[in-house]
Length: 451
Image 1 (cartoon, helix red, strand yellow):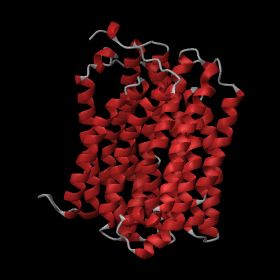
Image 2 (cartoon, one colour):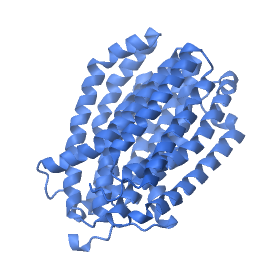
Image 3 (cartoon, one colour):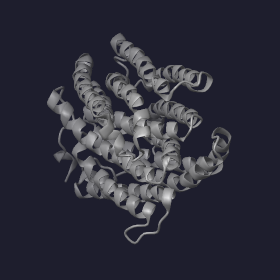
């Protein structure tokens, strides 16, 4: 297949186009979240402590995962912009430099986890057994970064060129592998060794490797490598590497601030006991699983805003944002209503008993309503990303995180209030994120700037 046969990658501003991009992204996002939920359901059978420590290790791994997400989002914006400009020959070089940067970042993440993290956990966690479990788990789990970061680069490529339907192949392979190996390695089933808590770490690493293998097979057999000239020029390209880092660094900083603050929140929860930590881990599942469509709309906003700016349609950016926002809000509202009508059904799958469920319901009500506000905020925030002005994203995140950390420290540590009050921080966080994002887009200061 030759470059002349490539389809036009420029998007249209319609609900059909929005959903055609969003739904496959949501399907791709929901599968890793199913992995998180599956891990926690299985680990919940080992006891409340395992479920609590899984929350700490899960958020810790997310700290490094969002480095890849920041790199992915910056690269996705650039690929989308080139697609909108119909400069297909530039996409392959951007992708190859993204791969190089991802490998370097994975190596740094492994070094930090191996040599720094044990000291941090021993200082911050009160229970020495929790420290031992968390460090042992993460020394295995962190090796999945190589697979995860390269896997995330496929997101930037396929979403940036509006080929989101292909995302599901890799994520399906990852999900199936993870569920089978979780069951086998945690409990010693299917002829596999019984590894308990650490079995989930091995399962996740192998599953990420399988997902990466499958998606690159798809890219090869679908001829995408030839279409986008992915393998035409793999030499080091300083200008493209610098451009990717310039756009991605603020996004990486933004995501790091967010997840580090979340880890801080989970450490404060651990100080309230195992049940509080376990409940908050379940709430993370709520945000991850039920927020997957919201994050898909966010990713769609990034790529479509960048694409139509590349087409020279800056005057239609706000029209596009409002279309996406309405769809995102509607889905989140439906999820909120369902969770509040049937909280027992959702919480019972973790097998923790009535005391746990009764304690978790007030927290679930706070979190489910926060999802509605998040559905609006992430659309406006990712619209800022799509304009290419990623330093604004970092400034907005810094403001929101400062307010967030002050709130959770005061309510949970100083005043020793309930974790339901602590989770009210999500309302504060997303509210602070929304206002400056909205005002920046409305100001029009991003118009006329090139990346």
